[in-house]
Length: 232
Ligand SMILES: Nc1ncnc2c1ncn2[C@@H]1O[C@H](COP(=O)(O)OP(=O)(O)OP(=O)(O)O)[C@@H](O)[C@H]1O
Ligand SMILES: [Mg+2]
Image (cartoon, rainbow, N blue to C red; front, side, top):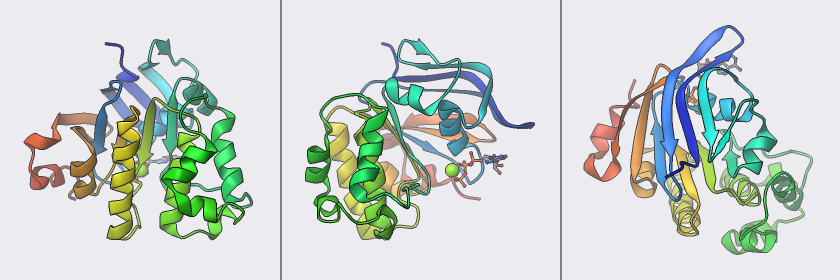
């Protein structure tokens, strides 16, 4: 089977700083994979390398059949990969509706339209004309997810979506991610919240020092085992 995303022995840098070291990882169609690891191990750098924000200097990245030689945000979107970035990055001077349209600009056509996103997150419709950054943290995360879905990805990369959110909001997100996955979209969930990992992911990859050092099935691990990979 062709994976939606395949890193083979990837080396990536910020300037002279060597962050990813021969990192190998894949996500297949419809899979729900968690990427876990302590602060600073390079989880966001993996995302940034796909988007061209960190520089790819060794190994290969494939998006389906396509080999990514010059990573760019729009190229990832064209090949079915959307990102919900760490910290959400809602555009301040755009309304909720305009932020959503931004997501559709570089993506593909499919199930997810503005109407479908509003069905999933009715609060976004209620607040459609509000500046995106005037929303609560939880609502901004919903907007970031909605914006990414507007590109109709086959794989959604979620970079620490639960960061800074109340447990009740994290519960809502877990249900939303389950719903998105049920539509057939694969998920790569970067998380330090192992309760969310256990609810969302089937498989996990654990990173240390810029490489994947352990992987397995979530159901075969206790929460304590998973926590071991994120504890300082
Ligand atoms: N733009 C940058 N320029 C130089 N170094 C960077 C840059 N962004 C991150 N780094 C460094 O790269 C390393 C990996 O950072 P990265 O953000 O990928 O970690 P992370 O696993 O996502 O951590 P966290 O869980 O805190 O989000 C860290 O040492 C960090 O300081
Ligand atoms: Mg990060």
